[in-house]
Image (cartoon, rainbow over all chains, first blue to last red; front, side):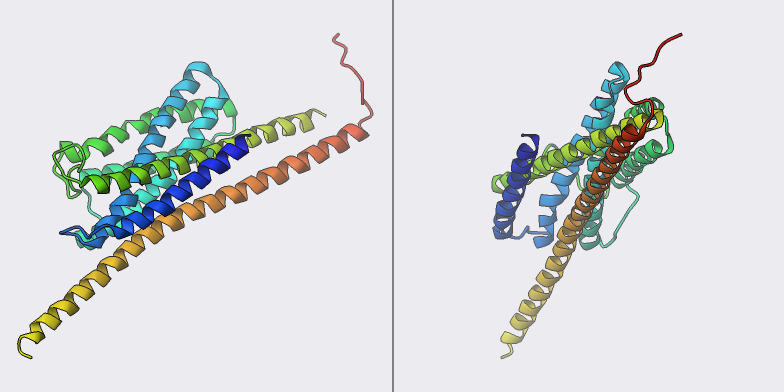
Length: 224
Length: 78
């Protein structure tokens, strides 16, 4: 049943993307940036999915520390890994967009730097997990580190409001303008990315369960 | 002819600008999908590896249980 739901969600995400890409291709050019501006339809949904994953990782980590239930730990690692993939895409698409519009691949402004720090922190989280053998210790240290890493997330989100940055100010909540039909396509892409993210997290979660089964089988084999 | 030359130059310049913009748009989209596809492929490879490992461990356990002399024995506490 769970498999079937995942297949349906995955197909729905890909169908929405295929249909929406067709609609995005038909949109007119943006007046200042031309067609390059259409990167926004992938750049922003990737970051939205990544930030949602970071919030989910925070909740799962707090959940583990409170309950000591390893399902929360599995959820935390699954969403963090998928979120890191989305963050990577967000950074790379942003850099390519910046090269065309600003003439530079990278600049150390508050938004870009905090985003890179966010990527490094969550990559560090996954490395930390690999470095600790004992499961309870690993889950506890990782949960504490994940909560610490989340401190960077509000800085990433609000940096363009708090400081003057090379990265443009927010289009949606700081007086920027975005035509309603463009917003509609952006929202559809956000939904598709979130669905894709949910499918990837569910698959990753199943892998964590398989890993736990392997650990338990190994313990049984040693006991025999 | 004199009037047409700047117009042609303008058209050529617009076409070049558009081509350049499409080039960067395609770089962005390609990068996005390549990263996601690579991640999905890594996940698929990990899934296969885990399944293989579970199957081999189960087979090993069955073999050990089958050959164990204490098969069916219970542990008596002192």
